[in-house]
Amino acid sequence: MPLKALIVEDDADKARQAEQGLREVGFSQIDLAGNGIAAKRLLRDTFYHLVVLDIALPAREHEEPDRRGGIALFNEVTARELYKQPRHFIGLTAYEEIFDEALSQLGAEAWSVILYDRTSSEWLQQLQIKARHIVASQLAEEQGQHFLSDIGVVTALGDPELDAVLALDWSWKEEADSSDATKYHLGLTSCNGANRKIVAAKAPGMGMAQAAILATKMILHYRPRCVVMCGICAGVKSSDVNLGDVLVSNPSWDYGSGKRLVKAGVRTFEPAPQPFVLSTRIRGLVESLQDRSDLLHSLRGSFQGQKPDSTLRILIGPVASGAAVLADEKIIESLKSQQNRKLLGIDMESYGVMAAGSEVSAPRPEALIIKGVSDFADSAKNDAYRHYAAYTSANILRLLVENFGL
Image (cartoon, rainbow, N blue to C red; front, side, top):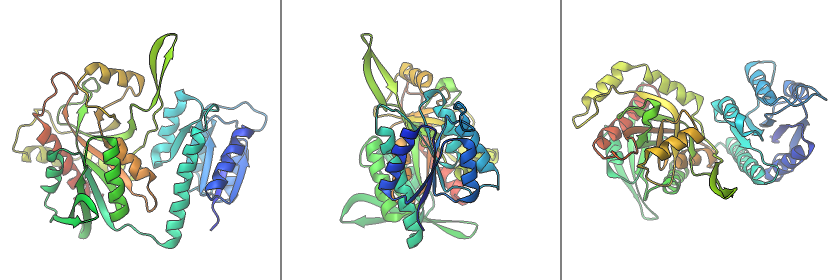
């Protein structure tokens, strides 16, 4: 089937660049619409594998762009059966102040939003990267490629995180491969009588790069339906996060992504994150578990070591990743004020796993981050609750797999 794309864009030069970029990666039919009405006419009659959608879009020809016109179009098209539902959306916006809103809307199904900058070609490169994966996914679907396992579990370098996963009663067996230094552990469990195949391994080093490398290797070799990172993280105390809470990242981003420059003699940093969001399906499963206070209470009570006094909670929200271990409240608060006021936690690896899940070749897994809060990344940081946080993280995964069909 020829790959079809629709570019909804009122800027002729930007539309031309996007069209050329999509043709270079394999899209053969590309239609253009300069306003919302024209786009809706096309979407009523044609199925598109991809819609590239300008967020600041005029509703009609000769009208001024509405800075949220693309969001309105997206909401109407996805809500009404009148339209042939596109396979993918990618949003484009030059307005940083509405980037998060656009990501919240389009990101609900793990679709993407790209920040446009007419002085750089980076936006087009990002568009082509995502478009290539759509092409690969379509090819894989046509060739009948399938997932080979159910859950791939990635943990950080430290022992407690992987130990907590391997302590789950999942009939673990170690698998050795002379061509790969990583030790993989294969497990088996069930949900409603159906088997669930699990693979788990820990990263060879600290940080996002090591986690991304391991996740990519695991995905390409074992082809899990879902790649999960379990382990520990730092919580943000001012966001009403308690020690022992379990955080599920939505979204996840690299807080060090951006530009460092000097303005008027002052060194400054302009963040430019590219967040990844949780899929709607997995978010629904986690929300169902959030409501099961009986299961969470039992889970907390079953841990025999040192644990916080607080009730076990699952919180879904923003968790950022960075290259350095943090033990400074001021840095945490600056990230909260400058990048996401709802920030719940910080770690060193999650973004790499989310990126691997989003950017690998098809069949592409969903990605999920489950991290227990072991400290607040402040001067009081210690390892007192590390084992408890690792334990709850691993067992939240167990409940999602065995009780909720992850």
